[in-house]
Amino acid sequence: MDQAASTGSTRNDPHAQERAARQAPLLLHSLSLFEEIFALLFRERRIRRVVEVGVESGQVSAMYARLGAEVVHCVEPLPTEEMRANIAGHDALDLVERPSPEAFDELPVADLYVLDGDHNYAVVSRELDWITRNAPDALVVLHDVLWPWGRRDLYYQPTPLDVADRQPDGPDGPTVWHDGVTPAGFIGAGAFTNAVEAGGERNGVCTAVEDVLAEAPGAWWLRIVPAVFGLGVLGRAESPAAEAICAALDPIASSGLLAALENNRIALYTRVLQMQYDAAAHAGHADELSELVAGQQQEIQELRGELEPLRAAARELREMRLARHELEQERDRLRTELSPLPSLRRWADRALVKTRGGGSRDRDQR
Ligand SMILES: C[S@@+](CC[C@H](N)C(=O)[O-])C[C@H]1O[C@@H](n2cnc3c(N)ncnc32)[C@H](O)[C@@H]1O
Image (cartoon, rainbow, N blue to C red; front, side, top):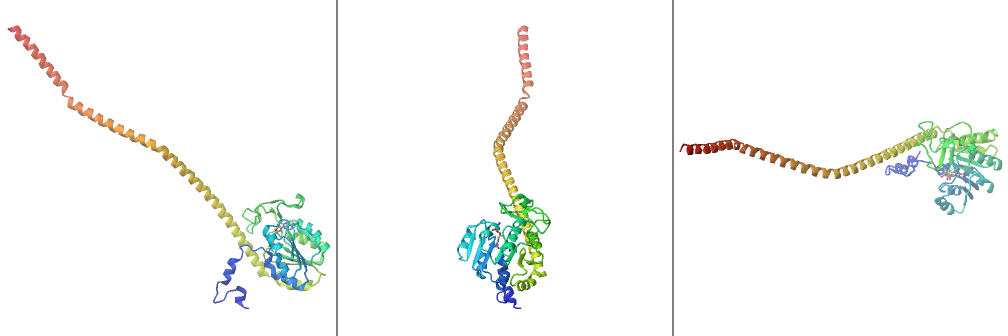
């Protein structure tokens, strides 16, 4: 095996593989990844007309034309500007701005139906009912027949489905790490909701396929490629090239290696989702803390403003106390200095009295 061809790297360019890995999106989900499987179908069958249900960006639509389709009806109820531009730029592509399966009635019968629209039991079983009745020889490719929407409904919003046709649903999403839905799982962020519970009757894409096939046991073959959320390929047992297609698909559909890689991929990706969720929650917590700190700093500033006049008053008070202390000291010094004065005065008074008294006696004696 040519190692360079499978990884892209050579001894002179040893980083080619990681360059390619870096450029790939973190979440692989597009049907363009299954080009080899579609090429196989186009090789084995004459496919002139394709009905593509669920278009998203419109980048995959051109792949069917490149592989040999003359017309691709791109059924999408919610076209974006990017999708319109991609479809308008290609003569073989025809935008059908309607939901499936209602749009099927307005279109000619096709050779290949690619079902990747509203991934729930009600819509997928109606799509398959229509195809098995009206286009029994068509090939059908269905995306999302494995985890997470194989056994759990997804509803694009706003959903046209009656409550009776839906499972109880909500904004939380599935994760590999526990059975219930969580805000850290595959959430639709307003674009879609998920069934709260997985499994049971009338729930999920794979369950819809099984129920439709069970209506005519043995009449249809189904192969599931266990990669990128699971690709189901379906055809009538009596339809052209059925054996050749199944023989080509069997090694891929039964690959334990592919199934293990897919399980590892969804485990790693949902771990990344959990970490992103936790990081966002911590960032929110950090924002709250920095708001709290900013508020406290503001309060400190205001208290400092209030403190300044109090400090000035305290300074004045201290100076007054000092002055009073000095005055008291001066008073005490003066008291000490003047303390002999009363006895001097008494002495002087006595001397005066004496002086005065002695003089009158002298006068009297004379
Ligand atoms: C998973 S995306 C399709 C991805 C696309 N096939 C690809 O491989 O890149 C699902 C698309 O189906 C569209 N959709 C939802 N309900 C639909 C319906 N009833 N009929 C057709 N398309 C629908 C959504 O608007 C969304 O663009």
